[in-house]
Image (cartoon, rainbow, N blue to C red; front, side, top):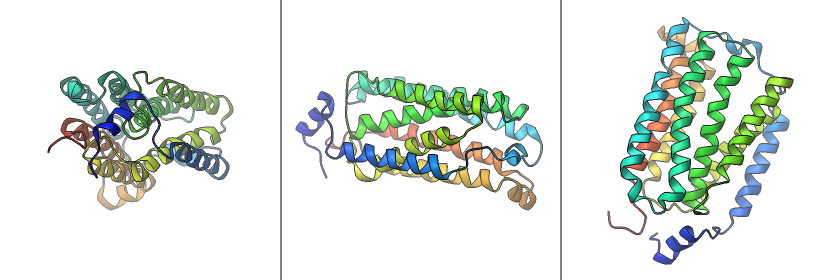
Length: 258
């Protein structure tokens, strides 16, 4: 389906996409379900990682490299964006979130605990989630010269981590993650893209799913192949960012020639 110039102008002018309010309600419903049904406390065995610590620490370099590469590509292709003033900041914050995740996660894995160290592992991830949600809102629902929605989303994510740190209640953090993931997936499936290349986002989602599976089967993977699942999880999650970078580097608006 080719986009008309009028539809591109709708994005640039900030008009809402059809059914965007329905998508927002669906994301809130997913978050509510997660907040009620998912565990409200961390499993004490969560920090019982398989194998030596150093692979869990150093595998986080993948996030650093992916974040730096993303910023470099963003600088190079910025002029090709439909609305550079609106699209640059969510993308930049997403890549910066990856860089911060490298250091926060490495610090956590050097001395794992279910307190402050884990909080500094989670905070950069919530920022990256908010930024990527902002990227998808820009590309599929509303294009604005000011991307202020991203800032309260990031602040909300940080607040859920702070609340968990103070109370050990994981409910709001789980709900926030579900809102970010569910809202992003809903937009990818049901909203028309502004750019070509959704297959890269699809591969990124697949790699993130693989990362969660590697985390879940950390010890079993270590017993099977001698390499723990958790450092492999870091590599798979960083590959998700690589897919976003590939989309950014190769993106063309739908109504432009291939």
